[in-house]
Length: 136
Ligand code: SF4
Ligand code: SF4
Image (cartoon, rainbow, N blue to C red):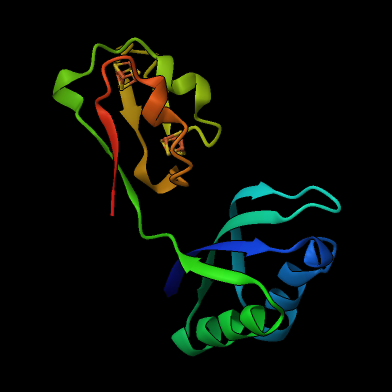
C-alpha cells in the first residue's frame, strides 16, 4: 500500500469546495485527516495522509489538487524529542492536539507517538527545557 503525508494550503475561494470527496471518488484514494483548520472565507490548512495500492493514483490526486489552486507540500519535517533530558512535567501534552505527546498513565512518563504527529510545532516553545526541536 502506497502512502503519502502532505500539507494542503488553500485560498478562501476553495475552502468550501468538496476536494477530499473528489480525491476519494475520482482517484480512489483513502484519506486520513491528521489536522484541519478550515474557516469559511479564510484560507484553510489540511494535513492528510493519502493511500492507495498505486503511487500513480496518489500522484494523479496531487496533480488534481494543484490544478485547483491548492498548494501541496510534503510533510517532511520531523519532531525530535531528547528523551534522556525530559523531566516528564507534561507541559508539552497540553498543546498537542493530535495526542502524539501523552503521559503514560502507568509510568507517568512522557510518550511520543510519531505517527500521530502533524508537526504543528506547538510543543517546541511549550517545553521549559527546550528539548523538543524540529528537524528537516
Ligand atoms: S509538533 Fe508537537 S504538538 Fe504538534 S502534533 Fe507533533 S508532537 Fe504534537
Ligand atoms: S515539556 Fe519538555 S520536559 Fe516537560 S514533558 Fe514535555 S518534553 Fe518533557
